[in-house]
Length: 473
Ligand SMILES: Nc1ncnc2c1ncn2[C@@H]1O[C@H](COP(=O)(O)OP(=O)(O)O)[C@@H](O)[C@H]1O
Ligand SMILES: [Mg+2]
Image 1 (cartoon, rainbow, N blue to C red):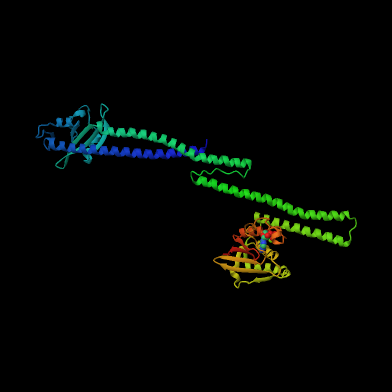
Image 2: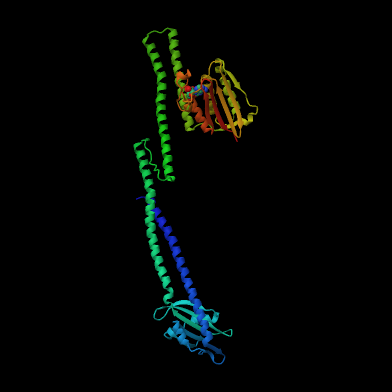
C-alpha cells in the first residue's frame, strides 16, 4: 500500500543480501585456497621424495627409474597414497606412467612444455577420463641443477573438498534464509514505523477536513523519537494557531464594535438635526463638531488598522541607515505641546556620540513606534508628572527606555498589553482614548527590526517601556 514501505523493505533486503553474499563468497574462497594450498604442499613434497628415492639421471642412459634401498616399490608407495604418476624426460618421452595416467593416452603437451621451460611446478584441478575430479601437479625433475624431465602427479580430490562443498551448501542456504529474514524483518520494521506515520496522516487529514483546531495528534508516551517530536511540534503549532485564530476572531468583533460606536453617534446626531426642522447656528456648529470628532476617531482607527496590515504584509519602504538620536529628537519635539499641556517634566539626555546610535530601519515605522510609546507615556501620565527617556549602547545593541509616572499596569494586565486591542479597563486607568492597537503596532515594528520590546511597571508608580535594537553594522 505505502510505497515507502516497499522501498524500505527492498533496500533493507538488498543491503543485507549484499553483505551476506560478500561474507559467503569470501569465506568460501578462503577455505578453497587454504585447502588447495595444503594439497599443493603435500604433492610437492611427495614429488621431491619420489625424485630423490626413485629417479637417477646420467648423460648416457638418460632419466631412469630405479628401485630404492627399502623393500617398497614405487607403485606400492603410490598405491598407498592413491596417487597416479607419470614421468616424462626432457625430450617428452614417457619414462613411466602409473595409476590413472595409464588410461590417458597422451600427456598434456602444453603443461609439460610449460614446466620444462619455466622450471616451475603448476597445480590444477582437472577431470579425468572417468570424470572424477583430480588434483594435478606437474613439477620439474631437477637433478644436479638441471631440468631433466617432468614429474606429473594426480590424486582424486575425494574428501579434501567435501568440507568445502558442505560449506558451500550451508552458505547458499544461509543466503536464502537471510533474504527471507530481511524481507520479513524489513516488512515488520517498516510496518511498526509507518504505522505511526499513517496514524499521523489520518489525523492531519481529519483535522484538515473538519477544520477543527481543537483536535490534536496522538503522541504516545511509550517511545520518544523524531516522529513523536514532530507530532508534538505540530500540536504546539495547532495550539498557537488556535489561539491566534480566536484572537483574530475577537479582534474583528472588537474592530466592528469600535467602528459601530462613532457611526451610531453620528447617525443619532444627524437624525436629531433632521427631526428639528430648523437649527440655530449654535446647534448646527455643535452637531457638526460632534460629527467631526467621531469621524476623526474613525479615521484614527482605520489608520491604525491600515498600519498594522501594512506592517504584516511587509509592503513598506526599504530599510536604511537611521540615526536613532535624530529620530527620537524629532518625535520628542512633536510632542512638546502635549507635554506642556499636562505640565509634564521631560528628562531626556541626548547622548554625546550620535554615531554610535545607527540602526538599520524604516524611518516611518521607527517614528511610529517611538510616537506610540511616548504618546502612551503622556496620555497615561498624571498631571505634573515626569517622563524619563534614556538611550544607551552596549555590545552591538542600542537600548531605549521610556519611563513615566502614570498609574502603572498591574501584573494581571502586563503580559497582554502588547496584544492587539488589549486595553486595561477605564476604571483602572481612568482614561481610555486610544484603540488598543498602539503597542501591538509597536511590537510588530520592533519585530521586523530584529529588536525586542518589553514593559516593566509598578502600580501607582509608573511604567517603563524598553526597546532593544541591533546596532547598524
Ligand atoms: N505608559 C502606560 N501606562 C499605563 N498603562 C499603559 C501605558 N502604556 C500602555 N498602557 C496600557 O496598555 C494598553 C494598550 O496600549 P496601546 O496598545 O497603546 O493602546 P491605547 O493607548 O490605544 O489604549 C492601554 O490601553 C493601557 O491600558
Ligand atoms: Mg496607545
